[in-house]
Length: 256
Image (cartoon, rainbow, N blue to C red; front, side):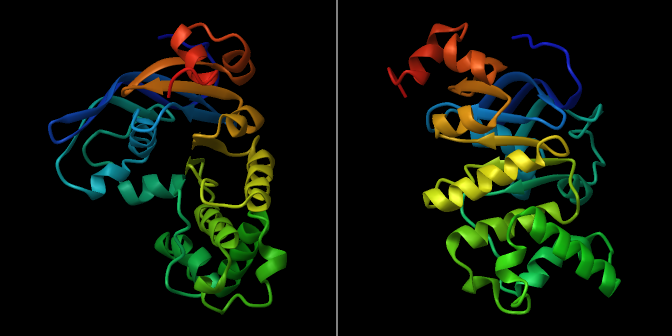
């Protein structure tokens, strides 16, 4: 599987990943273009989310996992021993399928990653929390209640809060794992609009089951099946004239 050359933020080379004896990702070589949106599509259980979580080594939080191959972030193999995983995850942030507000105030949620980075100056924290909330299109809705519990926000607001928390440390890459699957259409549109606004300054990879969403917001689309990368290309080409018959069958609903 080859892919055109471009400015590459993350590249996997022959990446395989196993949970114990089960191999969930097989020999995937894929490049993620800098400051663009790459969508990962495919049926449930095809390895999309597993692959996504490899990109900031989220699997390392659990025992019994094994990586093979390479994951290059800005040319450096993050699978090498001694990789600073806390530092990696501040540069390659992640937004999960379900909103994940911490049991603390709205302000402290957004400031959490900044404090982990050693930022303690009150004014700097205040400024960066405000900037992150504005990027996440949430500032106008919460500016008067920053010290109230984040649990009081609606589902859509909690997801945008999770995005603000991820954006606060100013990551180079944001990984989105079906970020709108549990949200209403209005909240979904706000998050898609946010992703479009971030494009050009942040690299994004999104796992989605929503083919229309992939077509609306992504620059590149990768189709995965049974843990393997079947095809990747410019989104408009993948959706109008895919090279592989299996990709066409999935996009047209003939299987999946």
